[in-house]
Length: 335
Ligand SMILES: Nc1ncnc2c1ncn2[C@@H]1O[C@H](COP(=O)(O)OP(=O)(O)OP(=O)(O)O)[C@@H](O)[C@H]1O
Ligand code: SF4
Ligand SMILES: [Mg+2]
Image (cartoon, rainbow, N blue to C red; front, side, top):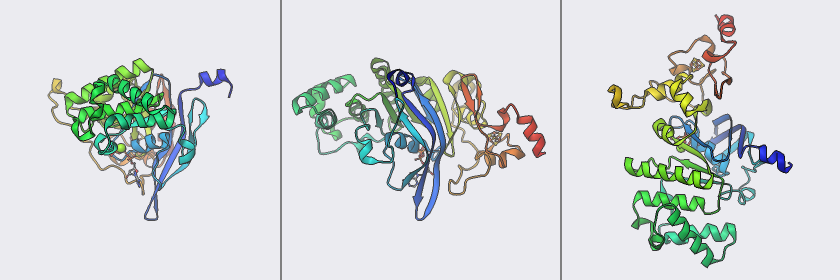
């Protein structure tokens, strides 16, 4: 690819990506034909119920899929070049240098027997080839960048609060100067105030370093505050994708509407999260047609048989038979 066409390519382009897991001889499709693009500096929220495929999407992009996963279709391109996401060794130069992941439980991800400064310096030595002294100095700078005084680098993970540990994870994620950070529920285990501080930090780093951010969460209100765009996932597929302003003001997909309705809103007296009725789909035996049809209040005959494809509406897209230009014809044909 030439330099100029590379410049025009999105930072990340995921096209038709499908991943299957094999477990006890049974294969299930965790993500199915996932496609989206991410531009430099953009923050996109990836939202959906438990099991909808958010983490699998993140792990596939970062080349961190578990050994029982198989990429059954599609590709991931970084700056226009296809990534070898299934080849652990070939992904090594890309991982953490282009895309870094901040996981949910910092305590599990950090090594309890090493001081945090050492854990941040290590990727600088291994990936950037820095000598130990330089890497330690950079680790100190990274700690300061995430709001921890460099002299706290001598601490062990258990000597820090949950919020500080999550900051250390962010410092580690930044060590090799990636362009993309994927936060997989990075604030879920934290109290509300610490959660707000970490999200603020991610927002500040994003503008300071022109980072692109994929923020995975169950919580649409987190996305509303932190992201430009939101992608809604259901049963391994993206079902709606648009700007935060569009999706919150005019959600089109019935699942998105129910997700937004489920958010507590003290202004109108809604104090509790209202769960979406029905059970999440079984991916081994996924519902035919639109996977949401057994739970959808607007389902029609067509929904049980035909998989809805995307239609574009301005800057958003939605996969739902209610929002197809040819919808009336199809409903008539199935009547
Ligand atoms: N290693 C694995 N082996 C087998 N199945 C898996 C594996 N990891 C995930 N799955 C299955 O793949 C589907 C998608 O899981 P994934 O972890 O991507 O969902 P998620 O949206 O991140 O959920 P959560 O919100 O609970 O983190 C689920 O049905 C899950 O059970
Ligand atoms: S395609 Fe049908 S079942 Fe699926 S969300 Fe739209 S109306 Fe509901
Ligand atoms: Mg997950």
